[in-house]
Image (cartoon, rainbow, N blue to C red; front, side):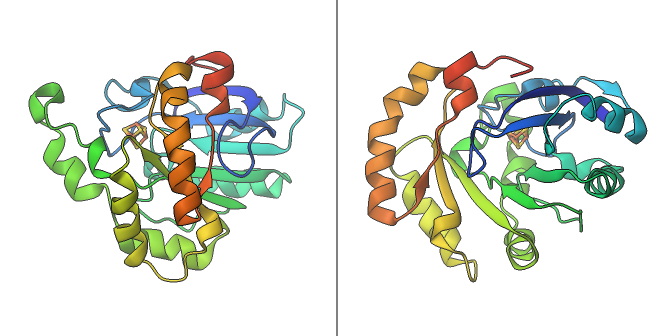
Length: 228
Ligand code: SF4
């Protein structure tokens, strides 16, 4: 399994924010968000091949039972189901962080979906060569619905501008049984300052729509650094 990094930190986003967690970051992604904050898992994917048992040994070195499997896109890894099942059988609380573009019946306690909005499409980056596939793949309503119907979930949307809330409303209208309390909004930004500049208007719009706001604590605390 291609792994970019395994590290121990605190969850910086979403409803488990602040929980000490071991992060297993797979490398490789089927999307190419223009602002991707982990380009070493997508635009220039790098990492090393780990066997599932080696990953389990590394995870076991840390005291928290919370494990976050993230990426890249962890669901494209062939061994993801085996890894998640083994983590669960060892008593871990497993969160899978995914863009929800493909479904696998992976064993976990929380599916943290982050469907990508229109501003993520790389129309000009790399001469736009990934734009079309990104556009086709970035929203898969069937997959999102399948996760909503089968798992404990949260829906995290990255917003860049006020209009993005309208796009989120359109997406939610196409899904069934979404609990508004599970919809969380966070700003797009790779620095604490970029995030801070957006906080006020995001919170005002969250109040209007009834969505939750989530900070990106790891960026505020450590900057956009690997291993944090
Ligand atoms: S889905 Fe995540 S890892 Fe993949 S390109 Fe977008 S931000 Fe990067």
